[in-house]
Length: 525
Image 1 (cartoon, rainbow, N blue to C red):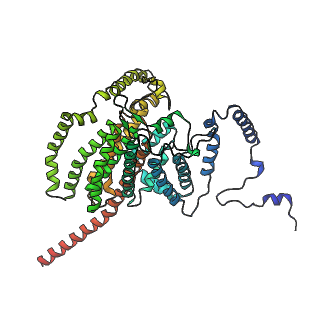
Image 2 (image 1 turned 45 degrees about the horizontal axis):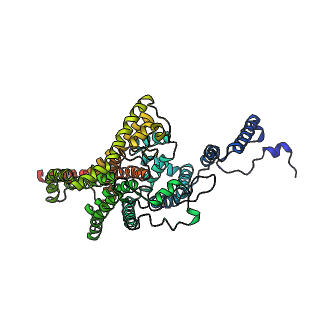
């Protein structure tokens, strides 16, 4: 039996369920013609300007890829969250343990680093999960809305940066929903700090990073900056070598150790076995010693703040939980003496004062930072909306005596690149994260070791906020955005637990009132 042409055209074709079939007559020919012309211009421009403007030419394919992900059909199957979580842990570990300057370098392409190998698939898989799973979208949205101001500020800053920071924030918020993952993350952070300290000790003995002479040819990058990192550095006034471990500078290594210190202290003060507490206590002097080997004041300040503030927070938290009727109040009442004594020692001990405030060898750093602010403030006033991403050092125009263009304070970078609005958004983002983590952490009276990490996270973010006033590099920024996602996830879990406990408490009160009424009735009778 034959079918006429008109009836054949009327028959539906095999298509995916969420899509509809459109006949060729509905396609606008002008759109096809315009697209063909745009592709011709794109190809001609690529042949003319590549490989010098590869980033610009990558925008249309990236936009098409995002469009394809957005158009994916809804699936009732489980999204690939297990793969996403595995990539998250791979990204986190490689961020710390693998030197970012050991990478594949192909002509015309950016460095293919381990972070990009794990981070880019992580980003796209996260987008796929958001696109195909209604349940994933609802769960992630509920978590982020636990503290909506944080994700709004993260998104605003991400728009300014034109990067995917908001996605990494959402990913960490989802990862830490499962109980125990925050504790595991802190433990991995601690173990990696010990590994970096071991590398730092070997590096101090050798006078350069241990792998400097053993890099495979396919991972070698012929770049002056990389060669300088492999050679190592020393303070010009003293000539003392400054360890840097897997990070690109000794300052970045010192910052990482300062961010880790509050979590190590939590393993000492938390509900852990004696072996865990002893191991954490033994880690503290090792971390402090490696900070000394970095010859970095910002790490000394960060570790000092953690050691100074955490005991007070620990004692107040124990009092609120009704624990330690003697130890908690004793630490609280003796804390002013401890605080004043610590400040006095840091001021009157020449060695400690030099580590924190600096002395002769650090005078040049102090003067250079003052000079940079003097040069930067007029330029900020003249252009309060910012000069653009990545041009802060050029806009400032400050050079060291060796002729190196540099900028030290991340606050100054924000003001010069993102303007006053970007600076205000960033400060609000960090400030709110510190506030919410501290507020919920101090008010928590439960026994979950996982949720107890809100307090050290708040202290780590406070350390980061202080350090950024004198350190502009962004090696550890992904760790901080992971912490922000963890804060949001833990607060969400606390609120869910409180909502679940509320009906139980209400039922117990009602049952108690009924029992009281029955007892009163019997007595009256």
